[in-house]
Length: 81
Ligand code: SF4
Image (tube, rainbow, N blue to C red; front, side):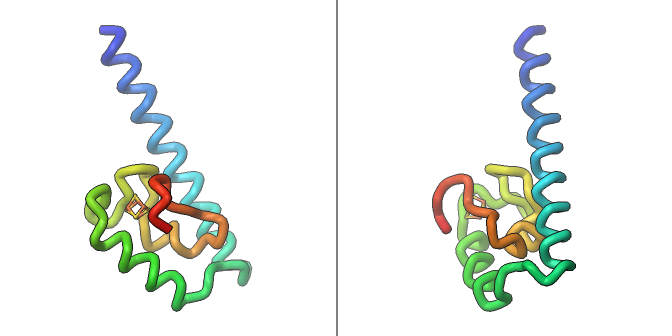
């Protein structure tokens, strides 16, 4: 029972963290403080071959990748970029 509770809390933290990082990326992109497009493409090419990618999301942080890469302060949770 305790393990199930811990897993549920971890899952909720994962969702909240992913949502926060996506909103931050959107805000920076919309205010002209986003990452250069060419750099976004380079990063997405790395993510596309990554074992942690889960469809359109990063399995490490829960972010939607196409949003995450817009934020110049975002980084790979496993140090790949
Ligand atoms: S951010 Fe890093 S861990 Fe996540 S999918 Fe991209 S390369 Fe993989």
